[in-house]
Length: 190
Image (cartoon, rainbow, N blue to C red; front, side):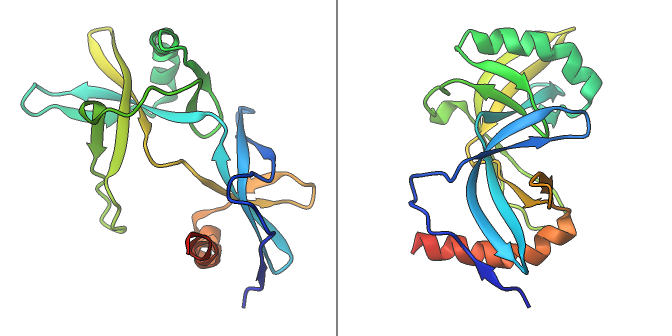
């Protein structure tokens, strides 16, 4: 079975930061929110330093408009400069970081009228709807795009390699360690 130990932490202090790197060499600075040792392997729960954003393309007519997440790197590259410009009007700096687009700067206060609920359809998992806050919208080649930031934090779970580098866990590895992490987080809340 798993043996686990957690370092003592103050809820308000983070134990440091670490950089994730994707296969394209892009980086993502993250705070280490928690660490966990299982069978002599160190795992870390990471929270990006900057706020993650998602870009959606609105499709359909007004009555049946649908938001489609833009994941195609070619489209992201085409609209990145425009998205960067509209976000700079709010003193936000858009970054093309590893694993997610992020913005540096202070996000505007949450307003109910600017919230969007994304229903996630997945037959295998019972996923909760995701709440997103609208930051800005723009048009490119007659296509409307909207930039949102999730209200819930984006977390990454990684193992620390023998070389001291973080490596994201595969879904199978995460499922093995997830119960221990949840137990630790639940105990902290109490």
